[in-house]
Image (cartoon, rainbow, N blue to C red; front, side, top):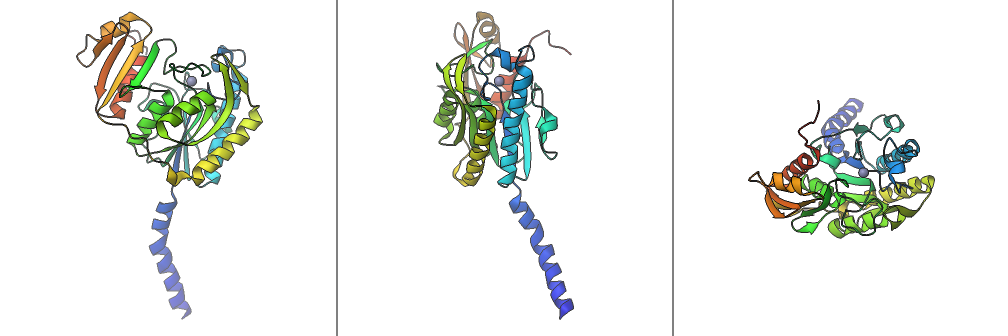
Length: 299
Ligand SMILES: [Zn+2]
């Protein structure tokens, strides 16, 4: 009897273990920008030449760590973090738990949500900001504050968050939570629905906000990630109609003029071009090219 019982236990273990493990696997991608991080208001915090950058990349990292830790506590088995601001080299990788993987630097396929093609089950946006067409958002811009004045997807102006959500939707991954200022949250929610949100600061203008303190922001982000993971089944991938039509407006004339030499681009006004792409992966590849390419690129 004892041998038979042991045999049954072994058989049950062998038969049931692989599917149970497969069912409990949950991959989460955390895409981290910086303009929506607690306290950031100007270039003084946002790049290596700013006098407060060193402290604020630490705050940025801790917000991402708070999200990663909360996601793990709520059942995530795999966490990928994508550094999605500036040079893509802001996050202090030594602060993350040892099983997290961090995506760094550009250019890269899938841009701000690189890694979303790795069978990701849920996407979290940390430190996101509003679009260049938003009159309220702190440091509001879309992909390039220096060169672009509008990006529209199927005729509707988009923020980086809505665009990234549409890429994630292509891979059937829903966005479940966003942190940033109130304007950034409202814009993404208007596209993807009522996801969980952590408002790190309230906008007072392009270069001003009333902000939480760092620890309060980490605590709020952890709470909202926990809530989002609990509601995960409610969130649907953000699917846009394909093929997609993308409109891009430039600050200056020459980019629009020269791109229109190529048959894939239609010039729609003095500063604007339009292109079509079969899906968001192709659209993102073209978008990356438009904001990256220069003939003097090195190496
Ligand atoms: Zn940024």
